[in-house]
Image (cartoon, rainbow, N blue to C red):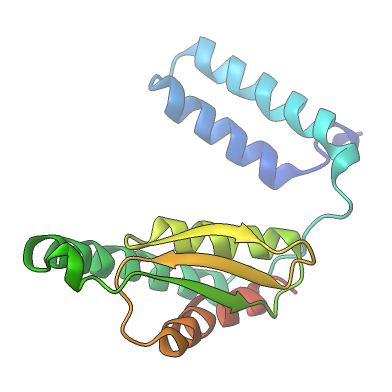
Amino acid sequence: MIRNLFPHPGLSGLLAVFWVLLANSVSWGSIIMAGIVAVVVPLFTSPYWREKPRLRFGWAMLEYLLVVLWDIVVANFEVAWIILTKRDRDLRSAWLVIPLDVTQPEAITALAGTISLTPGTVSADVSACGRMLLVHALDVGDRDEAVARIKARYEARLTRIFR
């Protein structure tokens, strides 16, 4: 019964929390609406989920979140420095093609989202076969080094999280 009502309990919890945050109010109305959204959205979308992603919670996920948060903070300062000190013609922006080792759509989405969250980079496209990710970087010295850094810092950790 509960499994039928909450086919994706993690998604339900996340939706409820975000609904209350977006409502910017912890009133009975926002809590009731959060509960309705948390039940209805997963119920209607569950037929479209091929299978639930199997995640490894614990140290692997905590490490990933800490690395991403650190990289976001550092990249903010790097981008600010680039904007303040480099002329446009001195920028070495580049398109990076990242070969993907992760195969789950959720892991690819998490990787693309992480790259886009980090200032100075944005994910632009995933190949039709799902094996390549196209990323634009604001200032890149060595393309191979930038690709290796993304694969080592993010994709390797995502591989451990998504089993």
